[in-house]
Every structure is written in C-alpha cells, then in structure tokens.
Image (tube, rainbow, N blue to C red):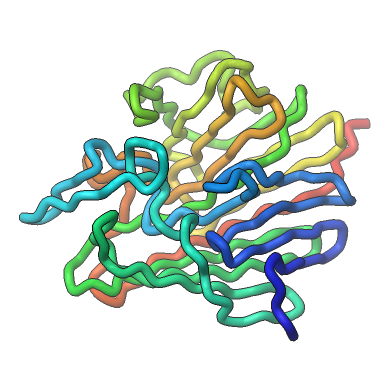
Length: 289
C-alpha cells in the first residue's frame, strides 16, 4: 500500500488525516463535521500532536537530576522549551495497514535537549474510535525522567461541556506554569460537567482517573476519552481570543514536573526501558431527546 502525506484513515463515520510531520493529526471529521481542527503546532495546522519525552514547560529551562544539571534551549518563540521534540520533527513511516499507520522518531542529544530516546506511535481508526498508541524508550546510558501525552484541538461550540473525574485543580502563574492546588472554580468544575468560561483558561487537573467526555449539545455529538494505563493529569486550554477551539490534553504527569515533588508523575526509565501511553477517543451521536 502506498503511503501519502497526509494519510487518510476512515472507519464508520470517522475520518482522520495523519501526517509524518510532527507525528500529528491534521484533522478529524465525524459524519462530515470537523470535530478536531488543525490550529496548533508551528504551522498552526495540527489537530493533535504527541507530547514526548514530556509535555508542557520546564521552569528556568533546566532541572537537576542525580548529580547533574540538564539544560534546554527554547524550541519555539516561547521562552521555554515546550512540549518536547516529537511535534517539531519528521517521523518515519514504519508500517501501514487498512486500520492504521505506525510512525517512529529518534531524538539524539543536542543543544536544545540532552534527552536521547526513540518514540513510536501507532494511529488507528476503527468503529468511530481514534486510538493513539504512543511509547518512548530511553536510549541513554543514564536513567532519565520521562512523560507522555497527547495535545488534541477540539472544535468549540457555545454550549460545549467537558466532564472528567479529577481530584485536583491547579492554578496558573506567570510563564504558563502551574501555580498551586486550589478549590475548583465555580465556572470550571469539570467534575460535574462544565461549560468553558470565556476567560483565558490553561489549567492542570490532577488525580484524574483517566476518562473524560466532551458533549456538543448543538451537534448532538459527544466524545469519550479513555487512557490506559490511566493518566493522572488532564490539561484544559481555551484561549479568550479564540472561541472556535479548545484543547483537552491527557498527560502522564504535571506541567513543570521536573521541579515538583516525586517528579510530578514523570517515570524514571533506565536505558532501554519503555513508557507506554494508550489513548482512545470515541465519537458518537448523542440524542438529548
């Protein structure tokens, strides 16, 4: 089977465009309606991209682990090294079949990041369900902290609602870094099913049980998100100057985890050890009667 870029996956009412650029999705439609839209990444055309070898930012662009200090250089216009390397690299196509495509990427230590790892991602579509299987293997001789996640961009409608079982709400401080654990705000209590406030939102929800739902009442559609093993963190990003999208990001760790107690959920990998992330997003019609 020949492989084009982007490569189209279809099953049932769900169609997805996959690109080796950034190992990303360029869009997803359900029954012809765009449910994931290409607005992210360096060219503002990615509908979802993988977070590897960890997601979000590292304060001071450095961290100390063991007896060594590791430094980063900014990889975008953001002052911090952000979202790892995978979303900015070209992935190789390792295999294609009727259900999906498998991509791989290896990062060698460089001035931007001292991490040495190999990432793999299999993207499949089956029975209206998108599956993102992501893994990272430490190729360095030294043990290093790793994390994984996905960064999807969902279409936003005026009445869209997000529901997830989470135990913590983290405020945001300067530099888009997590602040402190606080009470859930009344306008963003995702535990009971929250609409999106019109204010700027960029918060982490901790002690997440790994499942969430998105409901679009106007479209009579919903999406069910599930992670295995259950990811502990769900990020919600919704800018105030754009009302057409929001991001709901499953992550294995907190932002700025390198500077947190117990490494904020990051996993220590010895050489050749692998961390896995399995995320499914099932789209379906929802009749409100």
